[in-house]
Length: 477
Image: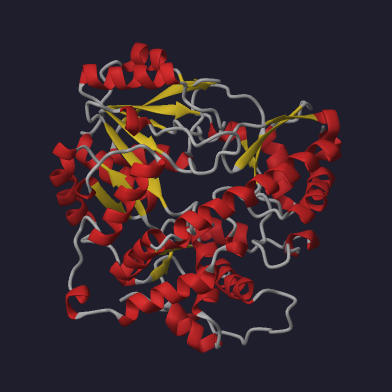
């Protein structure tokens, strides 16, 4: 039996003086309970509805708190089974790290924004339309019928799959039927599903170097043999992949905006990658994780839109465009493999929670998704510009700033000789969620750099927060 948070961590009333946002207080309550060991990996958290009633607050407030916890890896949504403390947390080391006394600057908040400035992978939760979302979820709940309460389709809600197929046709140039769309447990669930269908133990897989660490971990867990392929200004070096492992079974790429360098895969290399897959009967897993956010020109077409031989598995997620607490991603799979993917999904997950899926479907089909994306593009462009300007103003020629046309993070190249891992550690000790670029490398040197997310940095806070960064690392540059 899974222990519940309500039995193990007593709740204190929320302070309603306006100094700290309500969702921030809920987030801090659970973060401290996990750090102090009151809640252990696997413990179940109360439902959003129940917690909202207990705190006498809107469900959207609890949703936002849970989204922050999920985005930082504290909790994991299990669909109908509820939300639990992440089993991946190694209790002794995690508790030691999380309970370490913080400097006074760590508790600084940006109005009601996320409390860890420059954190990557987290959208602007402060401007998500929570009231609208709560309305859509409530409406779907009121429409709940008896058939909706049985085990769901392992491939996902038909309404959501149809909505995704329509969206991809108009926005990403992908022509597919809704039968080719499968709902997954976030992007990691999509990787797990893809490797289970396409790979055998020790099969070779191309992966970008530097890479997105969860992909590398997922491939290791699948038993695949990882073949790191260098990334340059044109993206993955396809010719290098051919030389090192021509008979690889899969290539995992982020062609629209490479993670973490931000470069786009050039057209010539896209065509070369598809030609290799077609010649060797291999597949390509296209991670299109933040392609919607391009600040110069129109979003680049998806690699899948060029795929005339059905060798590309396209992966998308709602984590970056809505909020990560949803834990909803999707795959577009080759038509001939759809049945195999559905069987694998049934064996692993037995479906996903229908309520959230159909609320997302309504969010998309009723036009809210498109309007939200448009608003976010303008907002992120402004926040990106403000953060970049502040970096140049505060650090001057002590850094080099790499501004790519798209993406939700900046790559900052320090000109000093101190290693980026030390600089990142100093920044983290000052309460800033800065990452070291070199930690993303596998075999090949990608240089020294700092990775800064800007989505939760309001324009009027940029200079102040970059000032904190300068106080933390400036003497080493």
